Length: 394
Image (cartoon, rainbow, N blue to C red):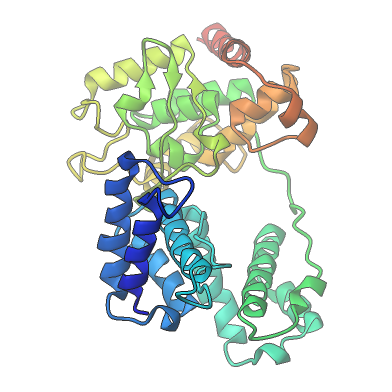
């Protein structure tokens, strides 16, 4: 049976009450038909259903996201539909196998995909390209990792990436073992990340020009990740309810979803921060709802500023002018935010939710919730502490 025939049979089964006990509602029919006919049949319209290879399907799913800009949630739905098409086919004896079963759609953020691409092309492939899978030994990989001029955390990520490669190879029956499971590689930091004191924050802010000053202030008092900060649009800032909606992350000028489901939670906005943002908006040439908060004048507001360039040109000189003898970047503000909240004796759960980490401990995640009032109070106490010190120094 050809794939179009199988797909159309699936649509008939899903909506025919005489065939299935729980037919889908008529409301879902247009979108389901769109996915089946315009995406799946359009790709495999001339193929025998059982000749479609899993690798071919995986490449198509990746292309839907990377080239056609479908979100991973949508791609996952399409994968589920194709899986259901083959399951229905097996149930009604139209086909004997399901090539979709076992496939997964990627949920990795663009920043993770970008890092993996670098790890593979710069480190893994140059050394291991000529090896057969059976020739890769744990002791050799362990010895090789020690020679890499990288931090322990980066080496651990490379080890995990290689392990994932072997896991996929096992699933595809290209090998029967994963030697990387026996590779030892610590991810412990070789140095503790620098954090800023309240005095250092104020000294730095005084030396930063706009819009970097407001960006740094917002980062220091919300703990937003760099991609989330740069990805803010004015419609994400709710001045009336004093809330920031984290809806996207921009990495290498590629828009994507926030890092995790927890990352997409709203962030409280202290009144002092709202005032700084409002002043920036009133002075900004790009201040419509859909404009970037930190829009690039060079690109006429069509994309946000490059954070690396912004920090290199203005951030580093400001750190030097403030006489701060520490390594400071955008992520320093997130580390600082965590440390100062902890020093303020805030509850672990409140800190976790302010930072929007996926979890702190399973027990806390399952049995405790910190509401917006508690998070707002914790944030405001920190803002008052720092700004009061700044006023005293003025």
